[in-house]
Amino acid sequence: MTSDFEAQLRAVGLHVTRPRLAVLAALRDHPHVDTETVITLVRTEQPGVSHQTVYDVLRALTTAGLVRRIHPAGSSARYESRVGDNHHHAVCRACGAIADVDCAVGATPCLTASDDHGFVVDEAEVVYWGTCPGCATDRSSR
Amino acid sequence: MTSDFEAQLRAVGLHVTRPRLAVLAALRDHPHVDTETVITLVRTEQPGVSHQTVYDVLRALTTAGLVRRIHPAGSSARYESRVGDNHHHAVCRACGAIADVDCAVGATPCLTASDDHGFVVDEAEVVYWGTCPGCATDRSSR
DNA sequence: CACTCATCTGGAACAATTCAAGTTTACTTT
DNA sequence: AAAGTAAACTTGAATTGTTCCAGATGAGTG
Image 1 (cartoon, each protein chain N blue to C red):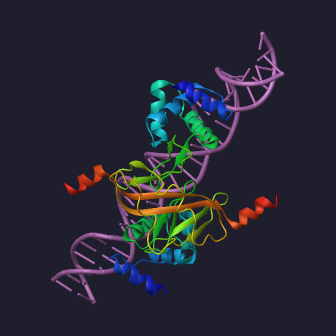
Image 2: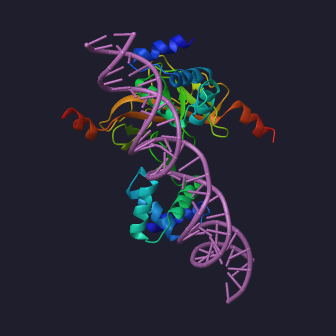
Image 3: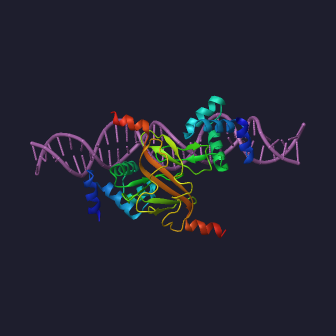
């Protein structure tokens, strides 16, 4: 289990430490969590890890490409360990829940902007805003 | 000029006040500005307007649908007065510049997710990440 | 013209994130 | 295996963007 994470860390030239393994494990088990939740999860395994360390680790892992940072408007930063398959996200306006959405076609249909204004575009991020099943029933039953 | 804004405000049932007119004028002349810049711009016309008022005004205008709030990851909230034509944005990773991008096809090609997990999707937001012309030349000339 | 409620002001509070200094730990070289 | 070096961790405080609160003011209504 953790040896897998160890290999990932070494592959990108990062030191293997307890906090980092704990963060990776937390993200594997809980996708789309915010930083505070990561801190809580990490501390169940490794008490005494400071919030600063978690921030550092998350940034290091993000720059290394092991995790992806997502930042829906109106909520704090969230992280997920599913990387490299450019999928998108559906976000609930009511409760903030996030679900993975695979890219419509295998290719990247939305990647090409009609007029890119000279921008060199390397990624197209799509956020589907709406209401999740739970919140939808809550509202209709009211 | 400002009479136009006055009509817009009345149309949505909001009081017509100097700060609001100033905010609308600022957004017309400077699209995609962050809150702090709006405050500065408003004060060139109306000194003494508090930051709190600008925040209030921006929120009121956003809920009323007169302006749109955009929130690219890694930067603070920005606003634009172009609404109702669901266009998208290209954001520069280096300097944070934002450019408008019209929706690829007249319709909404990306709106339908392949698997929506039961979400009722009402909007698809697309952000094109990349490098703006200015930052691209800076980097290559280095 | 007076009234009522939305709006504005000023100040303080808050949450998320980052900065800084010093200590410890993981990996590398001898 | 010991020592060195650079990365990583801890503690604590600072910053930034945003919101809350209480009271004063001004716009629109009857």
